[in-house]
Image (tube, rainbow, N blue to C red):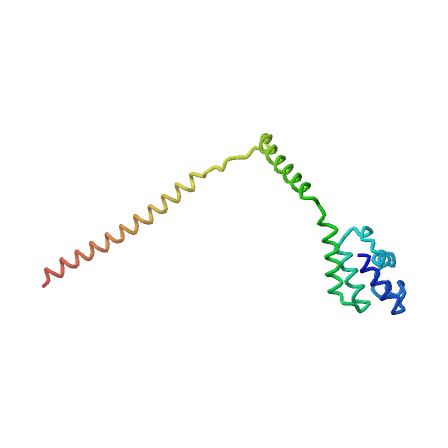
Length: 160
């Protein structure tokens, strides 16, 4: 980050621009610009906000903002990715242990008790009755139609 800050400072000074002018043009406080030029990333609680400031400052100075952002991202990756693997494994095993303990020590009270789903038999019986009536009516209609056809066939045979 110091390299980026030095690049900003030298470019700004070569252009004859003061921090106050940059601050006014970008609507960024001078203290923030000083922290960026000095490479003090710890002064920024939000990395994404810092990234936005770096991008806008690079663009303002006429530098390749995309390239600067790539360097910034590499710096942030190097700083944040230095967690030892053993520390990660330790945290994972603690989390698994805590999950197992929480399953075993589950508190059951009238307020946290899981209720079994009740089957509403009235709806099931009503559904079965409706379906039965539907099929009965279909068979009855078929029977009535076939009887009429049989009667018509018998009548037509007697007439001939």
